[in-house]
Image 1 (cartoon, rainbow, N blue to C red):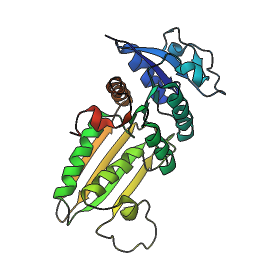
Image 2 (tube, rainbow, N blue to C red; image 1 turned 180 degrees about the vertical axis):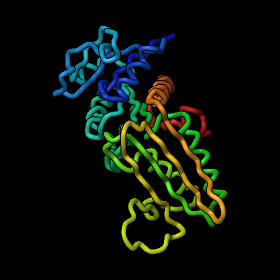
Image 3 (cartoon, helix red, strand yellow; image 1 turned 45 degrees about the vertical axis):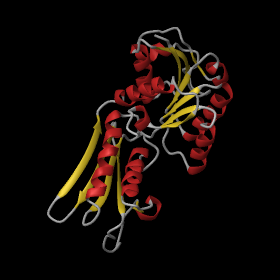
Image 4 (cartoon, rainbow, N blue to C red; image 1 turned 90 degrees about the vertical axis):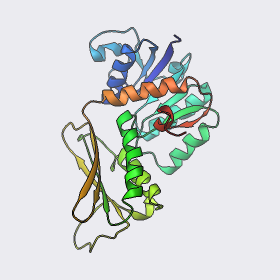
Length: 269
């Protein structure tokens, strides 16, 4: 079994620690490097100490050095950091698994461009369950194409900085696509005051932030006399970490191209 040498960006964050634990437990993966911001007081510390057991890999901030000899970088950081990682990974030929949310169209375009010469897996949510939920939403939207109002409700911990979540937006894109609509034209992200009656074609979003909620997502189809709710609830970040490692294994056989979790789960063909 060939070992994959993995670099984890943002290793000290909540997702970073989940990824570290996943890599340490995977027999086919080895932690190659662990990255943090230059101003972090963890620079120089053993990455394994974040989980209570030294591993021999020191946390660093030199991205170029970290990529030398690596196979894949896993990135769940912020858009500006991901763009810097993308540039250096493209130059070094190191594949990327990107779970960063809040990317704007220009940043997504840069990822698409980089994928012409680099294998990249991009998904706002690496959960296998969420990926299957998106398939269910596509089917539900096609069946419930009239007479049902659609709302997407998502909840996350108090530290999440973007809203709606990338997963909620992806849910909206999938539903809108199945209905032949453009999400940019039908999405409603906030309601306050005298807003008038709900328009039939809109897709509403509601955002909740509080406590330590890992991630809850619900698509509500409200008709006359009934409601259909399709919900995914994550109780641990381990599910996202395991999905990211599964994506890294998938990329091992790819030279270039942009992929998502549907590709990883062989749902696209």
